[in-house]
Amino acid sequence: MEGFIATGLIGISLGSQYTLLALGFTLIFGILGVVNFAHGGFYVMGGYVAYYCSAVLGLPYVVALLIALAATFVLGWLFEVLILERVIDDHQATLMVTMGFYLVLATGILVIFGAESPEFSFPISGVWRVGDVYFPYANMVVLGACLAAIVFVFWLVYRTNVGRSLRAMAEDRTVASALGMPTKILFPFAFALATGLAGLTGALVTPILALAPHVGDPVLAFSFLTVILGGLGSVTGATIAAFIVGLIEAYAAVYLGGSKGALTLFVLVLVILVIRPQGLMGKEVRRA
Amino acid sequence: MLSIRDLHVAYGGTRAVDGLDLDVAAGQTVLLIGANGAGKSSLINAVIGLVSSARGQITFEGRNISGLSSDARARLGIGYSPEGRRVFPSMSVKDNVLSGAATKSQREQSERWDQLVASFPFLAERQAQPAGQLSGGQQQLVAIARAMSGTPRLLLLDEPFLGLAPVWIQQISTAVRQMQEQGIAILMTEQMARPALKIAHYGHVMRSGQIRRSGTTDEIKGAALAEEYL
Figure 1: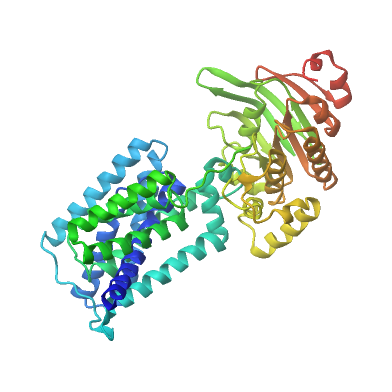
Figure 2: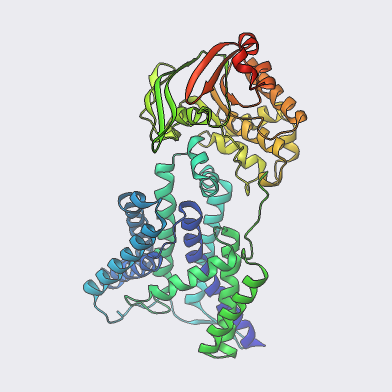
């Protein structure tokens, strides 16, 4: 029973990390109509910026986190304005451009830092233990930070003028613009918010998991899977799906083993999509 | 208030608007009637800045807005209710309406909401409902309230009666009259000329991207050319 609870805590922790990644991914898809293949690249970049600031420059880890968030936010903004916006109406071009940018990011990191995983560990160690239930303090801190970021994103999207405009743009970009919403600012903001979240997640998670130039590949795959399961463009759906994926991954890894765990996850996702092709929270709305 | 000179809109080789001149004075409701493809919606879209191929001069309150983006034009005080309503279907009625006042403060939005609810009480009853679940007439009122929430001085209404039952046409006509009482200038397109002529001050008959006849609504009603649209 204790093992079951501990695994659940790990699953929730994983779910919160996937939520941050999936929220950014679904925001970009919902608002800009772009499948961002560079998403994993911003996760890796966040990890390396945090590593460089804390391990090389000796800055406090919290400062390194904020710098990683700011760096990925700014790079995302510049990428949207300078490159993506020019091809935004051509879906194939956006796929090529984001995929190309991911390769540039990953290769750049490889050239600068090398292929070896750097020594980058979480500044807090130790385990919280109650009976036989244990939960590493590092995971606890990451879970808290991810939950705080998730609450912030939900507040921004559902409780502010900016969020209302972002949702309106996701539904009808042309009409949103004709109603006075400043799309030239909101599009890069949405993209930068998403890449900043990916960078923050990378900075939080890579000290616990692994940091290497290629760790963005599975991040992209899981973000994609989560967003499709939740319903494309649905912020709430992505959040629910991320926790489902995190819990399934944790329990399947413990009780079924690594490869069977991934198989279980994909089979369950397929079953859910057969029952609800629009995803968990994807809605069919009557257009009168 | 709105002055259009020598406006041309083309899609590929097809001319949708062909050298059109038009004026809307403050407080005036100007109606454009014409069959499908006459160029009415292209004209409205050119005024709000949704047509990149538009050529000519569009002046709003003395300022040339031809080179401005659509969002910049809206922020100058031009409200837009598009053909086919195009409400944001997953968003609540209240969020739809207030999305037209995106650049205003929370307090201004709250005051504007109260004013609009006073004019359209059904907004309060349905405020939490997704707009995509409303009937066509209700969606049209939401689209008009959305355009009005930004307190525009000029309102563009593109075919507000399209596909609606007479009871809803009556309600929307009432809403337009309320806006007229507030001194808002309105440029409106409609294929259903008979109810539209009852609420307009001035009318133009469009065909093949050009204005073929202009006059007061009584003159337009009496004109043989307009008969085919009545």
